[in-house]
Image 1 (cartoon, rainbow over the protein chains, first blue to last red):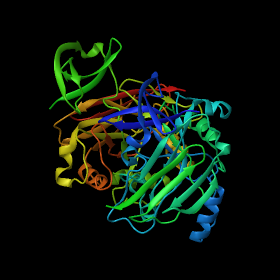
Image 2 (cartoon, helix red, strand yellow; image 1 turned 180 degrees about the vertical axis):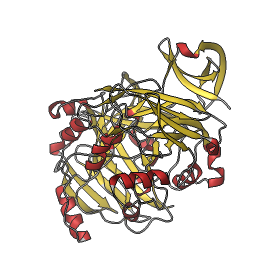
Image 3 (cartoon, rainbow over the protein chains, first blue to last red; image 1 turned 30 degrees about the vertical axis):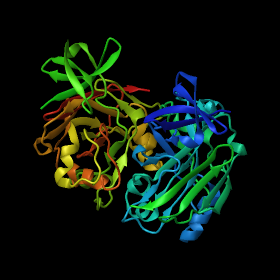
Image 4 (cartoon, helix red, strand yellow; image 1 turned 60 degrees about the vertical axis):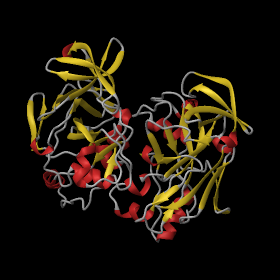
Length: 260
Length: 260
């Protein structure tokens, strides 16, 4: 089990390995050749960056039974379950790191919500892999907050600004290897108050299923990420709120909302 | 007017400036500092690569009135015009260069089609720009073929494999600066036979409108691309076919279809 972070110090961005309260700088990246150095920093002294800037940013739209049932009830419509694992996408302009601010645009409505998601980070190029071997291509796991403006999500033809406006995609704090998705629980807190708690892998189509299916048509590259969807019924967040997403074994992704 | 290509020779990929039948190698990229060198190659001797690998790959879904009218008639439904410029996305795994092969997947159906599109390539970071200044952020123009599997486009929840399977996004042959989109005509040929011809800028929402609107919410980076949609009613293409998209002032993007 290794905790890979990407961090800034003295104006330079490097990968590092986190051990306790210390970051050991690494030459290279976890996606290719790399060498741990003797250079270390107190974790509290460095600025964490997003753990990777993906070539392709995959994201699962709707992937938890309970989320579908509860959201349908809230909207007063019949629940509709996805018949197969059709992947979607998000974009890099929206990525921000742990502890960076989510900027709520001036014209965004009140239905401005978090979505706490498990994120698979790929370590190897992957094409046409079976479900059984899919996780061999995953370097490790991190956490994503799929921030969404529900008004725009309803009225736009695509998800572009509803989910891909600048700062709408917090990801981090780091990547942890060697974890079993079946052992994880996701807990979401707003201003310290727990708003959702769910078994992380209680998915309709799990990561191996999605990876295998996507890889039938698309080459997944090292450093690509796949966000796995959220459960529960997200609450609105507003400027001043602090949103935390904790996934057991990984850590906590924390971001404050500010007014744009 | 400069023609920027990206090319491979002796195992190395570089940017170059095309003049007539000659490529002059450039140190650096058109998106940052660069210096034209004295090193030159016959254009016919180098392998053209995609002119850029974007950070974010923007693509306009439906953007020509005539395309909407004719496609609606073909499908026997009422035409529906987009009320505002909502941008979509494609993915880098699907990109291939001029003269590389479009691989039709073994399970793809007969409704496998080209879409000839004008592509804006950004040269400068761009946020919150007006329509009037939008084109100042465009380095130049290239050509895209938004290859689409219509069966998957109908049955999947997203456009993932219908439009983003490996090799489904030919882009090239190069980027030409200093062009006026109003002066361009797009001509599409399959095996040398002209199948479509349209005024390139006969768009519902033109590039400045899309760029200005996207930049209200999203930071567009140097090297990002925006594909502007297609006109006409695309025909099916099948293994063995050669598809050419010519846009006046830019050149011709040519790709053969092969069986996957």
